[in-house]
Structures are given as C-alpha cells and as structure tokens.
Length: 316
Image (cartoon, rainbow, N blue to C red):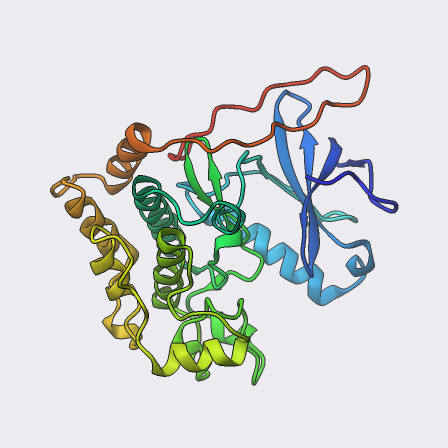
C-alpha cells in the first residue's frame, strides 16, 4: 500500500481513506476505515474523469456487475455510491499480495498452493459466469492470495455475455496482452470460454513461474497464442490435464468453469460433490497456507484501529 498523494481525497462518502491500494487507467482503489469497524476497499474514478460521461457510465456498469455476482472467491460489494457527484464502490478489503507479485518475487507456488489457486479462481469464474458476465481481464495481478484462499478482483471491463461485443471498438481488444484468448485476438467477442483460456495461462504461470507461451512483447505473445502449442511440460501432473483443456485453441473445445472444478476435485481425490462451492471451500480450509503479508498501517492518531474481518473463500 502507498500513502495518499497530493490531490487525493481524505474522505469518500462515510469512509476515511488511509492509503492507496492501487490505481489504473479509470480510477484509484483506496484502503479505508469502515465506520462500523474493520477495513474496506474504496474505488473511485480519477478526479480528471469525474466529468467524463463515458467513464462514469463504465464505472456505474462495473458497480452494477459486481453487485450481481454471488460472492465466491471474489470481493463482496458492501456499498454502491456510483450515482453520486463523486462515484465510488466499496468492497471488502482482501489482505494479501497479488499472485503476480508472489510469483515474480518468490518463484512458482508450491504444488498445494498452485492447486488452491486453480480451484479458487475456477470457482470465482463459475460465480462470474453464473451471473451472466465475462470478466475479460483475468491475469495474475487481479488475483489476491488472501489468508483464506485466492480472490478474483477488478471487474472494470467485465461485461454481460450477450453485450460484450458492443463494448469493444473496431480493432480494439480489451484485456491484458498475454492473457487474451485466440478468438478475441481475431476479433470475436469475449465469452466465458475466453476467461477459461486466461485461467489456463494463469494456473500454468502460478505453477511454473513462466507464462505457457513464453515471454516477449505483446505481438510475439499474440502470435504464439494463435499458432503455437503451450509449454506445459513442467506443470504438475495434477493440474496439467485441466490446464491443457483450458488452453484449447478453439473456444468450443474448452470446458466450462464448473467442469474444470469437477475435474480438479476428482484429480485431488474428491468424487462428485453435491455442491461445488462447498467442496472447494472445504479443500481450501484444509490445504491453503496463508502467505506473509504486512497488515494495514495504523490509523491516524485519535482513531481506534479495527482488525479486519476474517476472510473465507465462501460468500457471506
């Protein structure tokens, strides 16, 4: 977390801001203190965009989409202030580093943690797709490794499955280079299968420390994604079949997120569970090892510090 900078607000809505958790092209995410106790994440557009009707509409769309998802290995929405003069979205604070940071600083995850990431992120995608949405930006930076398991964040470019194409301008591919499915590189609209492809790339990266299509610039990665097979030799045997299926060149050849979960659970010795969410939560509760992570900073003098609520992979 970084301190507030010149021009940052001190209070948004009823939330006292403590520092910056991150920033992107559309907005800033702040760590804030909830009046009732604990910490929350508050996202708001950059000040320069407050009068931009298009960006405000995108922000309102993100808030609406986030509310539709039944929380499961995702950040639960607490308050939607998207219709105010300074729109904001409040979600639960997830203490934990992004997957990208962990792998780049420490190398590939241990097999049990990589298996947990595969399960948790597939579960999050199932929740997103069950809500009729496509995330469109699944990548290691958008997966936080919380004390209770992986959590998928950032629905800034998520879209309805039926309207995703309407939000993509001609010649523009929404998403991050290296994590975009082949069909999207050739102009097709994003679909749940596109998220599944990104899941395969992400799990291979978590388990091996390398992108399954190698390194290089965005054009090089795009060519490999379109034309070359992924490099999966070092992916653990427990994960390799599901990852290989997710990385099929044809969207029609990829399994849905729920089928990925069933295959992973079966590979881990769990038969046909009645409830996939319960099964995933049970595995994470017994196998997930929290990673070291610095706690939030002290609150300003004179204000009581609250401990964050215990994080669990299941929704509330």
